Amino acid sequence: MKKVVHMTIQDALQNLRQYGFQECTKEGRSQCERECLYAFEQQGDESGVCYGCETVDDVFALLSLVEASASQ
Image (cartoon, rainbow, N blue to C red; front, side, top):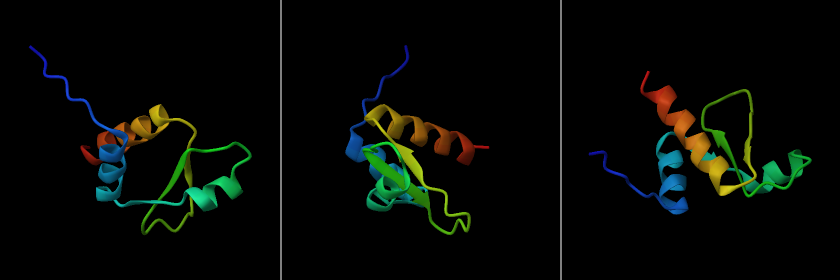
């Protein structure tokens, strides 16, 4: 039987911070043409890429990508 764990948005934000992402929502909103709920950039990344998340589901999707990348 598979155990289902429900994560809150606050848990997801904390996990992203643990993977070296910092919130840059204010800057992200000014860079994006769309309204974003949250935006993140990876600390130490010189490219300056800002990952804009328009919905809570986008935050969880970003976390899933980060976790998958970290496990490789």
